[in-house]
Length: 286
Image 1: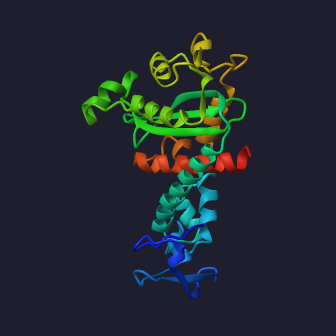
Image 2: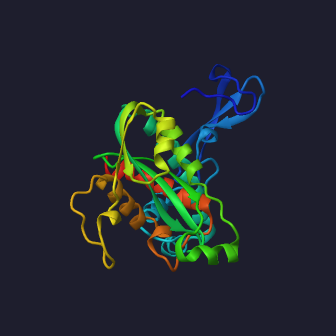
Image 3: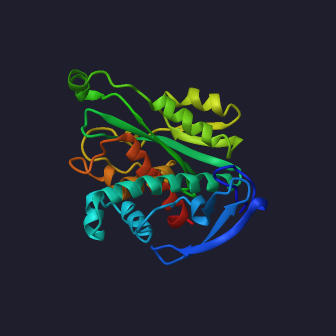
């Protein structure tokens, strides 16, 4: 790795070794350097994502619990650490996960088959629903990305929601635009893109992938006539996507229950999902 001075941005040709120190956490030897131009010092730890971070050994433990359905307070209780420490490490792990996901997408071969859809949850109350736009590689269940956005309440709760919280902005279209811009770098122009029969999808897919083969299928709920328990609809052409959504809803604590551990901030929900995507692509389907 080429070093660059964090102060004057000089290259490693102008750096000399200037001793070393042992980090308190883990007793790892870290090399120090001195820049001959600006005369300031730095070390190998300066360029790390975990710069000045203590208790680095708990990062892996926190990540494992975050993708296992545990809440932040439960993680703090099990690991005997402060709740604020878990909240800070959630932000760090999300930043690391996004960086690793981008590197993983850049190394992928051009993708030929993609499935995407919106799954719904809510923040704090059912009157404030949230949409999660998810895209996966067909048959591989490799998650290409997920974008969180707000959506207005619908059905019987729409009037109560507008009366109590006012009009809620619909950000699903912009979320799909952000996701499709990411997919343009790794998906073939003539790729096969599949989704359900949502009438809002076709326009955006043709805008970002004009040469693709776009197919829409009737949703599982649309295949069943009558009320009552949802019955099996036979062959599911969107099985890879639906199975991945089920795994995501089971593994992330903010999506499991309706009565507690509900998310209060959309940015933290996005962070939690990014951590799961990194673990899913790195461990579950590798």
